[in-house]
Length: 283
Image 1 (cartoon, rainbow, N blue to C red):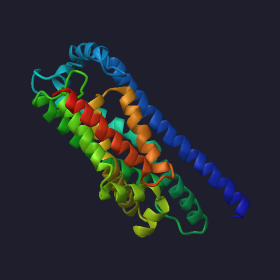
Image 2: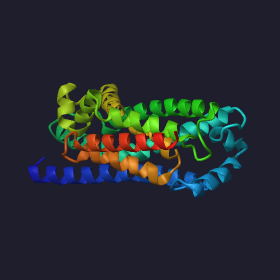
Image 3: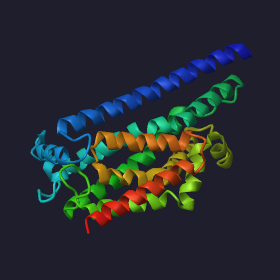
Image 4: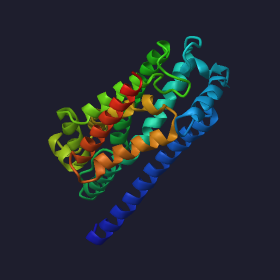
């Protein structure tokens, strides 16, 4: 295949991969927006959020008492409550993380096409992406368990946010401090430099299982980079759309803006400051 023809194919592949990722992200965000609207969830905090949360508490979806999953004092969660909450977290993670992994997937797809043209094919990008998403699905299971525990101990309000300013402040401070830790820096560097990540992990894989595991490795670094930011959802409200969007944008900026550790450190300092103010205001 000539260079011009190969370049045309690569451009087409990039367009296809970009479109596919956009569709996945759009569907995930559409589900989150529908869910937030259906629950009457607020797009911001305050008294309106409390009223919306009370509306949500009275909902019943397909026989499942949504209040049990989000409001202190309601009955214990049933199996349907766990399934619903897990699905909510899993789809939300796909919507939030797909844009930030796009550079890695585009690189993988481009190299894959060149390798195929050179008769040295590597495993499909889809296997890598699947491995990446599996990590966030596992995280969604953990997040569901965390939400159950917080609800069980009456630590969440009807909007699925921290019931007390002290708890919200502690979460903010912890997340802010994590932004400054060495492990955050190591994980973020792996996410910011796809080529360096591949070089340090033996390059591309020729088998589906190998690509799947490589995707899981990349997802693990991404999780190490972002898990504390996801915990902030319990501060602003798990279904607070503006809060979700803000965290997703911060994750994207950390990974694609060539500013090294500057963005996480600035955001971390702000989180600590806001957390201290929030916690002290409740004393």
